[in-house]
Amino acid sequence: MPETTSVINETAGKRQLHLHRMGLTVVGGPDSGLSGEFDREVVRIGALADSDLVLTDQTVSRAHAEIRRTPEGLLLHDLGSTNGSFVGDVRVREVFLADGRTFRVGKTEIRLEVRDEVVDIVPTEDTRFEGLVGQSIAMREVFSVLDRVAPTTLTVLVTGETGTGKELVSRAIHQRSRRSSGPFVVFDCGSVPRNLVESELFGHARGAFTGAVQARAGVFEQAHGGTIFLDELGELPIELQTVLLRVLEQREVRRVGERRVRPVDVRVVAATNRDLRTMVEEGSFREDLYYRLAVVEVPLPALRERTEDIELLAAHLLDGAGFAHGVRELSVDVAEVLRSYRWPGNVRELRNVLLRTLPFCDGSRIELADLPDTLTQTRAAKTGARDGLPLPAVELSLKEARERIIQSFERHYLEDLLQRCDGNISRAAREAGVDRKTVARMLKRHGIRS
Image 1 (cartoon, rainbow, N blue to C red):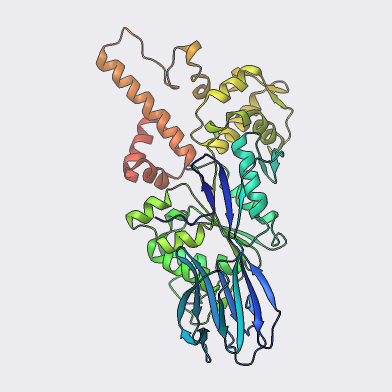
Image 2 (image 1 turned 30 degrees about the vertical axis):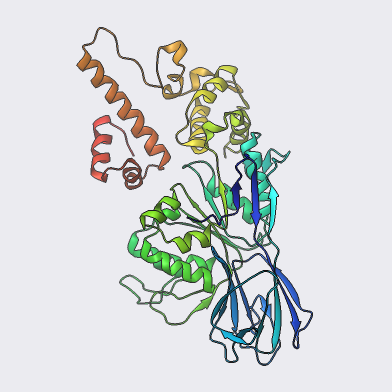
């Protein structure tokens, strides 16, 4: 698969950010001298007021042409204009344009310039970015990328394990963008029944299906003028990926049961904990949609990869607990335990653990006795445990010892799995690679409530 996303890993270990921009300058015709710089993936040219490059030339159609950024280069595409698009004397339907090339729409001559910028990703000095905190190099590099990307219109794909803070990143991008005064709308592609996803995304007309008692706008219309966050993107059914791609490219939606199209102006931030590249290779995710969404790809580190952030995160999470309490810090032993734990649920799990300890704290500090057993068991050197699982007594038979280890592993695995999946059994089954009934049966056997 060719590399088209904007976060680049160099062979020397240097990380760089590739910001895509193009410049268009009118060099001939009624609008001579008009110019603009664009970081959109699709730039519209025409007489319509909502075009990216608006021309007054009477020979230019309302929606005349567009330039699309593709893995192969910048593609000029005529939109069925009356007077055509030309490169030299040749009328074209589609053609790739090189840097510095001129083309003509109607009687207007336009020059294209590639103004891409490659910048080194240098960790910021700041340890906070909107609602995100971290002093580790990994997180300060993320802050550096977000600081450059947020003010643009570029589409962003945030990747990382469950609980790493992908929605917080999307909110931070929105808050630092020129759309911050507009709406921020969240849509979880994995939480909506498959037969309702299209209606939720794009809206529906009254009577479009059973239960549609009134017309309703979808989340794209609701996000008009702002940002839409598409969470769990890898769960989107492949038949709807085509519809989503068309909406992103044409910037318009058609409600289910309607013929009318409605223009939408939204910035898209998407997130997934799945490997979309592998899904593309397997045929379960559209390659063109992946390229359209992964213009800038921001990978988030797992909490176990940035344990130096634990205490800073804990202070931040305690401050934002949402209710009154007197706890302000961690004891030295607690900080050590939290740094040694693997955190399968990442920052979300850390927050849940801290909030659960607060009712049991007598003073202003969380002590070792306040932590749940699953954390204190990870202190292998003092408890004789390995990888957080208690060793069986040596007097047991091999069969009994093995059975006890398996049962303990199953319970810990299920608890961590549910934590990562926010108690959603269907999602837990998908991540575990088994059917829903198997997970439900194991939960019942271990007495775990979802």
